[in-house]
Length: 141
Image (cartoon, rainbow, N blue to C red; front, side, top):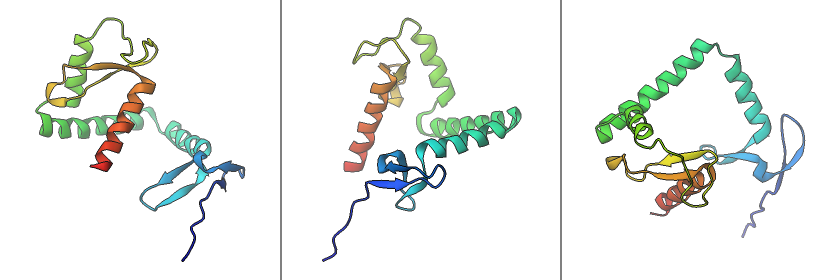
């Protein structure tokens, strides 16, 4: 019976530092950790993004928005852009996280896209935690 060894550290291919495995992104497609650490990977992505012209960045962002709008229109009968535009108009007052009461970086979470005018105000941390929990629930189902 083979015994699996759990990797705890890895050397980054870019900065050559020995780092904890949590400092590397896991690639689910190839079932392995990336060769470069998160900091180096993000620096490469950011450098590439900044090297693009303003027009190219705008074109890519517009293309992504159109793709997302088409998907939402097909599924919910309303575009993603319109839904968020309407929510910004409806929820104009001060934003306060419904979990911790923070007023910093508060997001509007839409629990049911069929009724997109009902939102929950969550700070970035709690919004991320909620979506992580929803993803875990979907994986368990």
